[in-house]
Length: 359
Figure 1 (tube, rainbow, N blue to C red):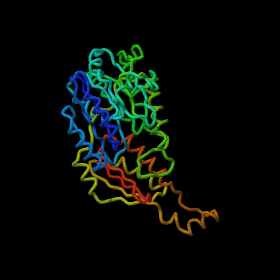
Figure 2: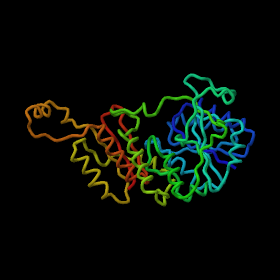
Figure 3: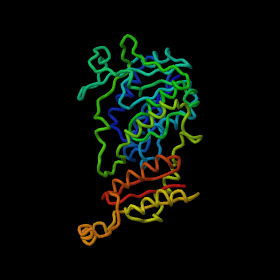
Figure 4: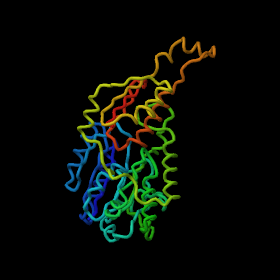
């Protein structure tokens, strides 16, 4: 038995259905699917739930994390932690499975070996067709592409799953391979006879969506580089197990609703000393309580008096831009408080940020 795990948020459902249809055509039915919706918008989530409901082999799971950054590791770990089937395969919603994928993957199962698969990348605008696997009209991945992997479940549980430090994009898949090798397991790239068992539907690069200005989409400038530095640490220090004992735990609906309805009890502007005190002075002092904070762009910073004083080189307060506040606060949350229930929302007018957290 293989459990296929799809981590998902707000993606095009036509692509998802293409992937599901390829599973429906498998020559072996010895698999099940866990579709983990990690905080899609409510309308999209409803459509995803209906789509999954059309297939008897799919179990749809929804988490109330729409006001948290994307965390593929935690989405996967939430399933892996309690999984009882012998093997799991980490999928991508863009993947098309060869009809014999499950059959051949089962033949490759080994408690001491992790297998990851070569993938063929379909070009932009190419329609998904069954004969793509035979024509070979696509670019193939190399051993460096580590995302599509079959694992013995007990081995993942032994290492406490994927490292949940990794947020947004990059490195969590390679990190788990590195840690498995450090723990003495064999990690094998399957490209037997150049056979391709998986195809990838085209989409634009997520890296291309990174912005240097504040947007409503949660981002941190330089997060990809930070993730790769964290990976380098795992390589150099031969890391094996990661995370704390509470790995794979996701914020509950009850905590989400409470934080969503809670009124701000701390209001401040983007003055540097206030933000620094919030992160390094106030946050560590909060114990066993819910806190909601609203940070707004300073009215004084926008005033004629402030700008006149700056021109005259008079002493004025120092301010972070709201983009800088965003990066500082989000990085603080994912580094130190990611295991706490929290809520992070950028205002529609881009002039404020609301943070809710259970300390």
